[in-house]
Image (tube, rainbow over all chains, first blue to last red):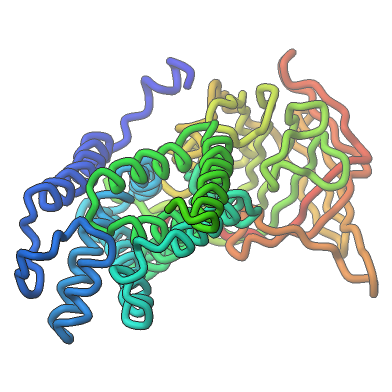
Amino acid sequence: MAPGFAARVLPEGRHERRVVALGVYAAALVAWLSMLGRWLPMPSSNMAMDMTDPGVPEAMATGSGPTGWALYLLMWGVMMVAMMYPSSVPLVSMYHRTLDGRGRGERLLRVGAFLGSYTLLWTAVGVVPLAANYAVPVSRVASSGIFIGVTLLLLAAYQLSPYKERCLDHCRTPLGFLLTHSRPGVRGAARMGLDHGAYCLGCCWALFAFMVVVGTMNLVWMAGITLVLSAERTVSWGDRLARTVGVAAGVAGVAVLAATAVGVA
Amino acid sequence: MTTTWEISGEYAEACNCDVACQCVWMEAPDDDHCTAALAWNITDGGYGDVDLSGRRVGMLIESDEGVMFDPSTQWDVVLLVDDEATDEERAAIEDIYLGRAGGIWAPVADGHFRSTEVATAPVEFAVDGDRTTVSFGDDMEMDVVERVGFNEEAGTVSPHPLTADLTMKTGESRSATVSYDDRFQWDVGGNNAYICDFELTNA
């Protein structure tokens, strides 16, 4: 920006924008701390089961009726905040910038509606691993080489697919998203949150499917996957990283299946 | 300061890309940089209490090499305002188009505008059927026609951010010349043009 221009521009929301960005990071941090500190309530406290083991949170939830499902979705939502909020900050800040000229209350309400619908969408996605678990308990098949191998191949296929690339393009260009998805009003903001969530879902669903298989509450895998999906969505070499992860998953999947076939695993 | 703005009317643009401009698909422009002239005829709307109907606005853009909307690509921009605008109207138009008043221009200006100048000129803006002719004094001139395809229907391109429904009619420039300062000199007739009824707002 030219100095002459910058000197004349004093966007009213600049300070507020920093606060909003910090707030989003802070929400993610609190979500991480609640995972690390295991502050979240879970149905039943069977000490024989380790929450970080594959399929255990899902089994506990589906075994505890509606309360279990609700608590699982709460946990899943917090996990999504932890994993997805950091890489959404550029878009949230940019969206806030487009609201210059609106009153403070309205700006915050719209940013809240945007993040709120985004979070609700992601929380609702938690129904998928639960339903899948209801049909086939992950805890029972998690040690099966065939199950893990097939999951890895599914991840590889999606990472290398054009759908993944198309969704990443949207995530990596917050300006492009705003230019083409901006809608007026609070309801428009909520709608934009859903649209953004749909693209993120397109970017990340296979990674999350993999995470459910290795253990939904396994913090080491959570951290690793967060780093990968954040880099994929924000840096210029993200598409190459996505393909590298795809190739690695493919190689690992074939290796696991081959080892299973010859009886090593 | 709380200022809502909302403007609508007729729009046309002409650039150096062959038909059609590939920037909307996140590809590098022809010749790897963009020289574009955009023009708005505001028929309705305003900025707060300032009525902007009847005002005409032009924009000249020359981008760095590379994909126009890549975060690192900088643009030099000239904002042209019709010389019948009052000081208050011109200030409102500057606030909107230079990104000081929210809406889509805010992040565009933040991310891409390297230099901006504002100039005034006498304006002609006429739509006659499928043809739009625009001139801003000697600074900018374009004469564009819609391109029709099967069934004599105008082709459309989407998503293009400068209209509410994201859909532009594809056009071709009969002529498209810009002559402003040393840096903004081009003659790119016979290339891409887009035409639409536009609607922009920060509401």
